[in-house]
Length: 68
Image 1 (cartoon, helix red, strand yellow):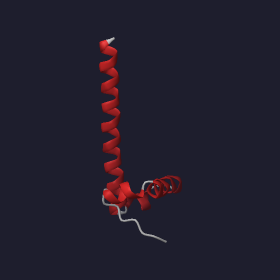
Image 2: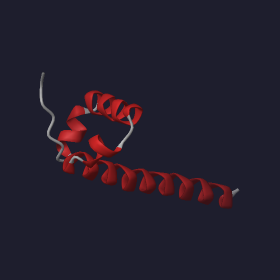
Image 3: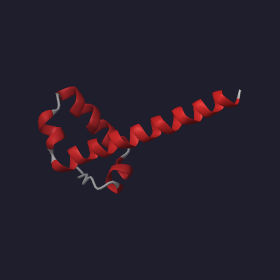
Image 4: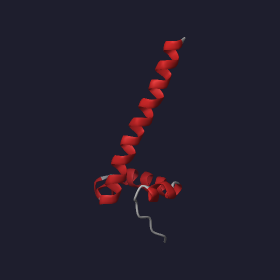
């Protein structure tokens, strides 16, 4: 039973770290503008929706979000 708990904890930490790596890379692409010119329309829409829904988080990470 202990091994199962250890593996579950490892899996949670691994997913958390992987998620952080991906988010840092995506935020870098947003900040330097490459995401908007290299991604397909569906991906850009998904990212803009995500930015809208979690605006404070993106601003805290350095993304400049304008109002319209």
